[in-house]
Length: 163
Image (cartoon, rainbow, N blue to C red; front, side, top):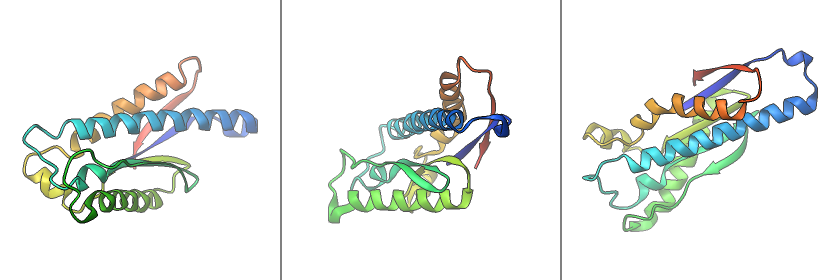
């Protein structure tokens, strides 16, 4: 899942320091919203689902980019699973690669990409488990909340766009 934020600002009238501060706030809002989404995804897979190797949970994470440069990489080794044949590390790598591919397609000034990078994630969802879809449906609200917090004392409008 990937989203972008469009700020309704006349950038030509802003000083470089002001632009930097706005970017920092947007990055922080994305970081918090992406963290919320990963937490939601990992905690809402259902009690019947068992990540046998830990790969799927390890592949679920996010990356933040500014002008095409990676500024945050958030993937963690799963606490569950037997880690057969190094599956957890494979999961992290798969997640990072999937996020990087998606971010390169977006070309946004600032973007956040949340993924479940294992190729079988869609199969798990087809069996009735929520791998990432629930977090996707909640993400716009999560990001909107974090943007409101970031700009609560400012008169800055924005729109959230699916990437």
